[in-house]
Image (cartoon, rainbow, N blue to C red; front, side, top):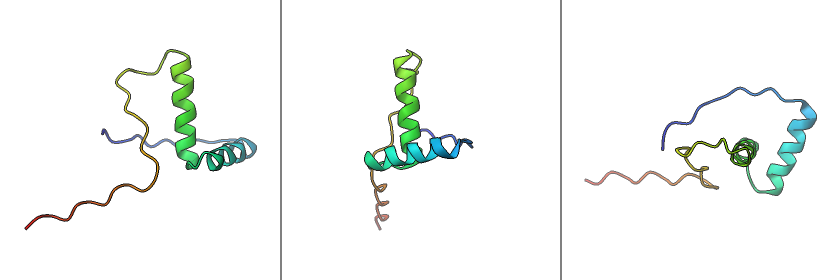
Length: 69
């Protein structure tokens, strides 16, 4: 997967709180919820690029395998 872009986003505190509550209801981080919402809006508008990678999987990333000797 390509490296993910980092973006600074300024939100109204009430909007942030609403997104954070929604994320909690969906068992997502606030960041993952914002990405989910953006992707859905892009798809509905017919603007989601075909080459766009999928959403990261929920939960902890897998542990790196120890090197074989």
